[in-house]
Length: 255
Image (tube, rainbow, N blue to C red; front, side):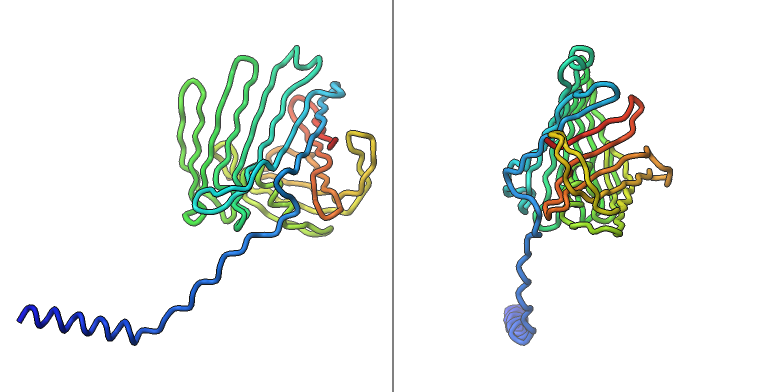
């Protein structure tokens, strides 16, 4: 009797499976078109306060590779003090990010800094479907913190590439959640007009003026007076950045 029941169940299962409508195959995912490519290298002169040349910042799109069950661009930014300032104050900084080529969202980002004899490593991993992140900071000890993410959260480095991919136009505004050091910020990008901007060589280029307004998790403004200029040539490369800091005005100009 039991064998007969099993046989009937198997037959019914086969009939139901045969009658069930077949699902259409899922459309293949498409990678986003981006205005940059592997090998892009951006080098900036960094000036600060009264120091005409305080250091150099280099940002490279180093690779495009399999990552976290997807494909990602690997972007690395490195900065260090130079000249007289380096003798007075040693700063070495390296940030990297993995940007998913399909979603344009970061998978993982890290920042390593060395100031004098102190060094610090910060790592953030992103689980965008769950809107959760994990932040780790390693100094002499290790700290771990879970982070709630917003929709399409970026890290500081990937945010610039996300803005370039949007291909902003004069008059537009974009709000972008950005996770930094275990905290979630909201960045409102306001795109102004195209204007002439001087780069490190002294050459003048036409660039879109973009003003960020950053607020913290309490809605309080963080910093002020920053302006970013993006090349108006389809690449949307950052050609100049000016930012106010407690140590003075910092200017990055593309070489």
